[in-house]
Amino acid sequence: MPSSFILHPSSFSPAWLYAELPMMEYQKTWDLQHRLVEERVTGTLASNVVLLLEHEPVFTLGRRGGQENLMVSPEFLRRSGIPVVHIERGGDITYHGPGQLVAYPIVNLKEAHIRVVDFVTALEEVMIRLAAQWDVEAERDPRNRGVWVGDNKLGSVGISVRHGVSYHGFAFNVHPSLDHFGWIHPCGLRGVGVTTLEMEAGREIFMHEVRAGARRCFEAVFGVQMQKIGWESLLATDEHR
Image (cartoon, rainbow, N blue to C red):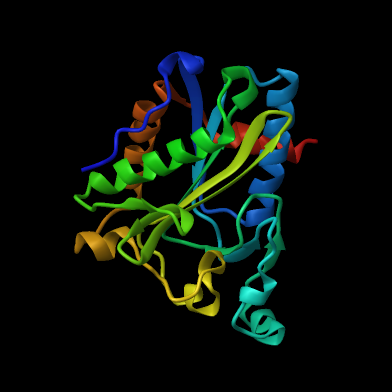
């Protein structure tokens, strides 16, 4: 059964925006997050917003680094064409790629008086409830933030906060190829595995269903209503800056 952690509905404004982006190169969405954080801090963006998307293949290193947890050579990586990007989120090294749902909540935690630790727990709760929609029992593990099925990691969490506004978020394995996870010690951990929702559920799962499920889980955990906006307008703003 899913756990029951929720944030008090009155902590947040009742309506959040969300945008379903296509598969995107990492740098483009990183730049978009920075711009949305700036607008949320200044009040130009009046609502919290959640970005849902998949990334083109990329390895990201968090604040703790993680280069030592790459198990392949720099030359091998160059030949693969997969970039390694050092970013400001918490955590160690991880992989993003097709078949993995990424959620980036741009949320004013200061305005809502929400502690970072509670926000991270709430993001884990979203993934736990999301897995439960396919009868997969995921849970937290004291070894590492995120959600697990046994000794296998199903979803990762890593955020950053600037002037009280969160960005980065979680990555939930729906049906990615696990080959690239074999090139790293995921999240800097050794002796653990990585799993997917499809593997645990034992059947085909479509990404559009998981995106819709994620929206419902955000609404339930954060006590808000999600209003869809077009992703084209978000990117068009960046392209004209």
